[in-house]
Length: 218
Image 1 (tube, one colour):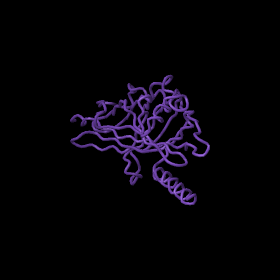
Image 2: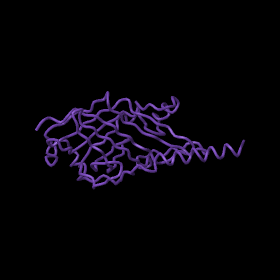
Image 3: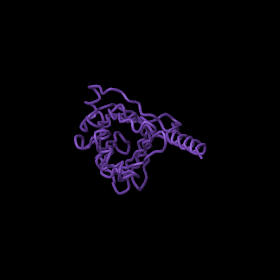
């Protein structure tokens, strides 16, 4: 029986690793003064001709956190977002979330996530991503990415510049932006280790699935 439990644990660990193995890791750097300036929504270099608000009913911003054995998937129930366009060309994608609205597959974890061990939601009720640039991805980019986006992710009062791939598709149904990428929670001072026999992994998978109205005719 003990041997079976060990084998089962190894299988679960392998499955958790596989969940993240094919996902790109966001490039994270310290915020530069120039980056903060560029993230202004009024920056003329962005040449914004229209800004579309996210369709919350069709969209989702979620995450997956893993432990040595097992993992938990969650979503942020309260969020907002915008895509900025120059004609029909995306030039920026911004979003904000309320960490206190995190909902996972475990009610006890939902409560723990609000504490200082994780989001510290009482002191930091909002987290934001403000884009600074969005450029076409290289041909044949992984996971069908069409663009690379860079900007500032402000979480728990810690600001880091992040760059990650995003797939932007446009149709009669609207503008659809999707992305899955990993970040290291330690970069935002989320350092709770978890149980000694079931440590929490530093990598967290972020999942963006955002719908916007169709781009205005040009």
